[in-house]
Structures are given as C-alpha cells and as structure tokens.
Image (cartoon, rainbow, N blue to C red; front, side, top):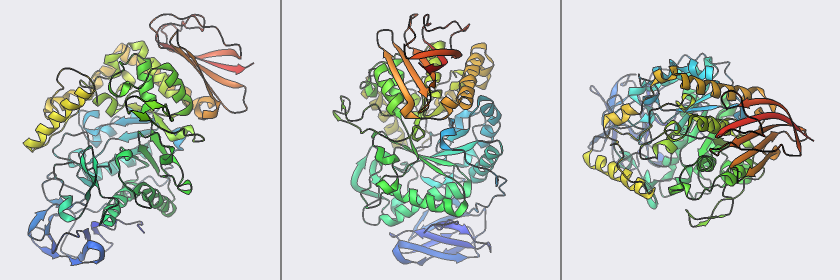
Length: 598
C-alpha cells in the first residue's frame, strides 16, 4: 500500500539519509555512483534493489551503475543536464502555505489549458505566476498545465517525456512547480497537471535497460505498449501509481488529466486505471484532500467514468472531442479527416444533451458502429472546448479560431462552450483571439529521430487530405512563433473579445440555471434551414430556464418565439449594439434570454 512517502527511487528520510529503492529486475549488480562515492545496492524481492546511505546529499548528481553501464535514474526527481545526463538527488520537502485550500467542486471548474514554454515570454513557471491575475480577472477557477515531465532539449509539447518523476529543469524544476501551485492556491485557483501513461518518448528512454517496462503483446501509435499486464508488470504498475500519488501528495496538484487512456493496453483483472483510482482514494483518506482524475478518451465508453462498484474505471470526468467536432463543423469546418463523421447542428444538439454524439450509430470514419450512451452520467463528468492543444496543433499550420472564423463567430463558439452544461475548457490566448499559432515543436538531438518526426507529421497531414508543408518541428523558430504575444491584448477588438469571455464566465458563475449542470433539463431545437440552434438550460421541476440561441449562418434570420416559452429578459447578446431579437437574429451571433415555460 502506497502512502504518505514516495517508496521508489532515491529519497531522503527524517535523518537526511538517502533511502534508495530501484526496480531493476534485469540487473545482475546495481550501484549508485557519484563523483566521490559508490553505494552498492542489495538485491530485494521482486526485482528491487535497495540501500540506506549517508554517502549522498541533496543536490548531488549521481548515476545508476547497472552492471557495467552508467545510466540516469528512471525515477529521478531532477535531470538538470537533460535526459542523457546524470540525475540529481532531491528532497520534495516544501514549506506549504495552503493548509486552508479546498479543491472546488468539479462542476465549478472553469479550465484554462496552457503550455509552460509558450504561455509567457519567460517560458517557465515564473512566467505563469506573473500572469495569474489576468486569469483571475477572466474568471478562471483552474489552470491545466500541459506535461512537464523531463523531455529532450528545452522545446517540446511535453508528450515525449521520459522521466515521469522529474519536472523539466528549464521550466523551474520541482521547487518551481511547488511554488506555482502554492501561489495558485493562495489566489483561489486549482491546478490540473497533464500526465502521460500510455507511452514514453523515444529519446532518453532507458527504461528497458532496467526491466520489462514495455511489451510486444500490443502495438500502439508509439510502438510497443507500456507493460501493464504482461510478465514482470508489477514493477511497472508500481512505477505509474507512485507517480500519480507523488503529484497529489508532494506537489499538491488538484487533478490529473490522463492523456489518451484509450491507448493503454491492460487486460489485468484490475485495470491500471482502477488501481490508480483505488490508490488515489486511499491517499484522499490519509490527507483529507480531494483529488480528481480526468481522462482523455475517444471511445465513447461510459465505463471509463463509471464507479468501481459498477466495474468502471473510476475516472471523475473525461474530455469530449465530439462536442468540439460537431461545434466546428457547425461553424463551417470542412468535413475532412476526423471531421468527416460530423454533419453539424443535429449532432451538436445531441452532444449538448448526451455529451457523446456516437452512441451506437455507424461511423463512416471508423467503419463500424461506435459508442454507447452515457445515460445517468452527470454533466460535470464531461469537459468540452472549441479549441485545445491537439485541435490546434493537429492542423498543418496550427491555426487558432482567430485565423479561421470571423470575430462574431469566435464569440458564438465561446458561448457554446461556456454556457454548455459541461465543464468548459479554454486554450491559452483564445480569450482575446490570439494570433499566434500553436505549432508542434521538439528539440531532439538524434538526427534519425528528427527525420522520423518530420516524416510522421507529413503522413499525418496527408491522412487529413491536406496539401502543403508544415513548419519544421525541430526548428526553434517554430517554437518561438507559437509563443503568445501578450501585447495583442491591448488591441481594441481583442479587448472586446476578452470582455465577452468575462461576461459569459460571470453569467455562468452567477446564474443558478447555468451554474448547476443538469443534463436531464437540457432541451434542444434544431432549425436546419436557418442553421440555428436553440438550447434550453433549466433545472428539473422548475418552470424557469435560460433560452440560448445560436445563429451559425452568415445571414440574418427570422425566428418566432416557440409556443411553449415566454421570454422575460435578454441576458446576453454577442451582436454589436445589442441588436438581436428572436424576430431579427443577426448572422453568426449568440443570444440568451431568461424565460419560463408556459
């Protein structure tokens, strides 16, 4: 049973002794080597090697000497000289000031996704800290930080991490992340961390030198699968569970976003996600704090967000790409690649009511019947967005909505997300219509790998039926072009959009009919010919509701007030000059009224 102290890797006890416990079933001999000493580890049961020593001190660099090979520690807490360099011994002790912090209820999360390296000119945790007041003004309640596990070089989206326990040194390392989380809590912001347990990056990946971290039983888009159910998998499972607990316990992270859990291959009697849920629940009992697990999953399988008591995976919530796809096609996105399965308004209406679009219907893109309805699952279990890192970065030129849609359509998209019954997520800079792209970038050092990354991107865009050439992921300029330009926020149109986002967030927070997400009280009416959608947001048993109307067409529309409702007061209007009414509805605009049922 994992508890209130990390049990693997190199850690320091209360006497400042180094307590070492490394899983290396492949080793015949294993030692810890520093510039001045060698600590010989003793073989333990089940592939572990351990020792307690006074020979190591905090801040000291070390290698693991596996038989005759010098390797960095796969459980290291710091890699100051990169993924090929020595590890650094650290204690995760920190003088926390957040004893009174209380993680908000999941339905109160308003998420802002950001990438540490491109969010600010500084490109580190201090750069995030300096701009938290901007997010507070916006009305955000939680930031989501893209992966920060150590990766090759200093430029990466984060999904090529190879040292899951080591916070990227160029971002500020472990202490920098702890300081950021402490500051966020002081300002009333929750912190979500994006973690990757479906694969490991290729460069600097020494895991198989230590033990069977991967298995050829399954193939994933990244090669051999992480070994969660094959021979020798126990040490791998411990490795991942310990990582989860570390973020919650030692960094006070409030929620983890688990990347692409559909790519995890595990046929154990207890799936690794279930094990993570059980161990997280035990940690919550020990600490008295609440931690959330949010999965990225494209299977439309409610088992992932079902309770363990129902043989579910126990995730608290999941991302819903289908809401994004239906929304973007409604706004005019060409039906290519994974958008080919989406026709627009009718499917967007279904997603507003059911979260998933495909719940057993035939998918042309997947060439099979797909999905299952998430009946009885509350709206707080679904995270929706009109933009995120994937949906921007997966485009060849990584255009944001600001480069694809009119100013008015951007406001309409914001309203669809922020006034939906689900948990809304914004991507950094969208609140002012940032002009910078969010391109895919890396800083590998191996020429063969760099060539494979370039070819892989070309193949991906060919599958999306796109012509042309994507910017070179390895070129530093690609990374620099992806940085937010905060001076844009001073522009007149950017300020207008920022104020609109603030208005929508305030409306969601303070209007009870919007703040309390209840899917059973969501009603939709589609006007296909007019390309309009009417959404009713209310509460069960109440005659009061909010009428939200979306005009996705590029012409003025005339709509009659439905017979079952009486409009009371206009509460939001995206049209300049507040000129919208139901009988004269401007192009590409959003309108909301308080109303009651007749």
